[in-house]
Figure 1 (cartoon, rainbow, N blue to C red):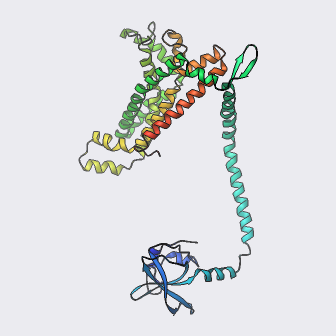
Figure 2: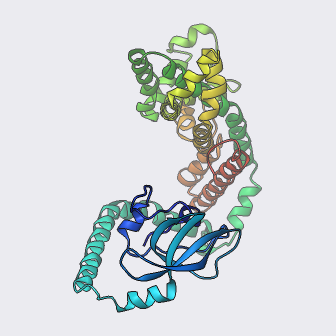
Figure 3: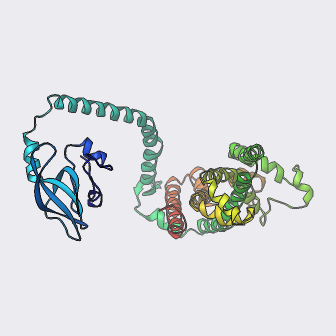
Length: 398
């Protein structure tokens, strides 16, 4: 049953000899009107309607709230003010109750319910594979890890309940704290560099021709298509001071003072292309008329990129930054693969993830490793939430 605001009632006209009648009055036998403050329906006269019967004629009065709902029957224009023929809702409800019910209504309702049930079953069928994988490979392992983190393995008593002892030990572990500080410094430097490089590449690809743009997109995205382990081994060869081609620079890229910067270069090479694709896709959704208007106003290419394109895609920038923060706090594969090249610089506690891995598979401290992993997950969640909260007013992410 359609709804019409009272503002629209003031322009309704009976179609005989006048234009502008609302199609809703022609389609529906009754149109329900909800009360608003702008108009009041008041009976002013009786007249004969087009069907030969008398109906109330009401005039619109602004500034008052109606005391009663009405069902529109006929709209007509009388001299002086817009007028609407109505019938009280109580009378309309009585007549509606006496109207014959469709004989096939029950069958149609049952058929509709069966159709909806089949659609729901098909939807669950499509969701089922993902749901099974989610439960088997994520939720169940997480539940088991939670159980491990609350117990402690002893030689005499075996597994004993330790409550929060493993978490208290993690908070007081100096090696875990040093690894966390190292990752924090790495993230503070590498995240802006990563996002800056990705934004620059996206703006360049968006500003050049289609053929050159496709070539640049492919060149920037290829490193992301390379598996992380293979890419790390390749850069390990390049960084090698014995056989790598970069040895002629005289810089030991895997020394204690430079290995963190070398890892940052590796991570930026690996993931900048992915962030570039996200930002470029956001740029493609911006209407080109905005750029044309800016150029008409005298803006150059740099001004359009800095003052128009970059603010418009602020939501995509925030999203890429969150992905980068999460990946940085989970820093694991690159230092673990490069560790054999210089074990003195990349220790077993170089990052929290590397430390948890070595606690589990080098020292068989599975319970303590599980506690470290959940603490790291909590830090990732809190860090991402704080960043989203701090940037919510500058982006479209709410």
